Image 1 (cartoon, rainbow, N blue to C red):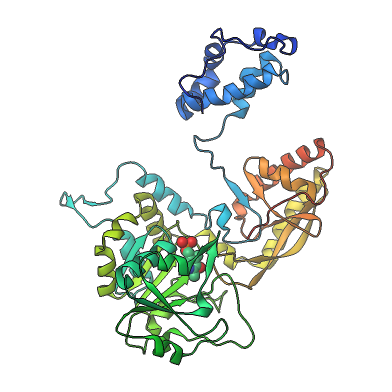
Image 2: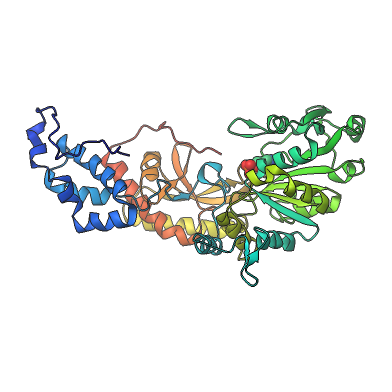
Length: 467
Ligand SMILES: *Cc1c(COP(=O)(O)O)cnc(C)c1O
């Protein structure tokens, strides 16, 4: 962004005179270019500051002789972003259903509409019937309790980590959290749950070993100093072989609260993922409090869910830290609509039938081949991602393209993120809603042309398929 002191091109600032063909003299003045009706309309929509910054970039290229001066306005219009934010929509063709780098769960249409409706001023803390203040986010909490009736109470915070921090602070600050060494998890990007818990002023009492922990280990560590026993679902790794862990039902026999970090946010058992735990099952087994993320397998917005005993939830919501972790109206709107509305895209991705995915891949490949593209449908394997079900693969289908398309695909609009496998760029369809197939085909054609123009790209071109 420019500063208010940036000289505009028509102020007589001394500049190097050896510009190619002295293009600058032929460059239309900035105010004249900005008066172009297309750019004036864009300034109304996106803001004059943003349009000027885009124009400045194009003028720079004109000065460097890369584009003729009379094309400046045209090129600036072409370079305008779709919105005033730099976040760009990406078609998730990675085959990773819940991709943290891509914002995890995509919202349902119902949730997007709810966000839009709430984005102005809205009755987030006001009872319109009485005109009095009401409890913030009550409808979202009620929707949660409808989906998980075994929870006596619920609370929503900014993310899963915040849910744990609030529980640890309110229930175990200055006290012990008893946790198995097999459940001391790093959740990603270098963040480790043990560090997070200790940062609240709670003490960790580690019990058992990496591979085996017994109820007796927990029982020996529980003292009057215990705030709670923590059970963590290892949502991003698996330990196999000579292993043993202690389930919620056994832990609930200890005379202290059991806080259980679910991760995925499944409200109830999910038949496609039989080994993935859910809030209802864990509460029925005796968990006092379940924590989870809203934007993993629940398919909603980023938020942290706390479900369980009313007395514990009350202690959390009354703790001063709760105010620092509270969610905004957009999150509350999206969460409620996710819970009450039609099943979100993550659900559709989980339940997509392999045969149908293959048919879509065949259709897309055929359509692209008709335009001369080197393209075929292949079988593929999708995964859940950091959000849960480690080690589980779901049969899927993909469109296979030359690896040289991977880079250009990320630069078209909408951007497409595939994965590079076996020297090909695969576009896995399981996490792509069928309604996006046409946009995907158009993006592929555009990227293919760009890859072709730029000549062959080395086969080892770096391309994240980051899970
Ligand atoms: C994802 C996850 C977290 C962190 O939740 P965020 O919403 O990313 O803050 C914590 N614990 C488990 C088990 C998880 O899977």
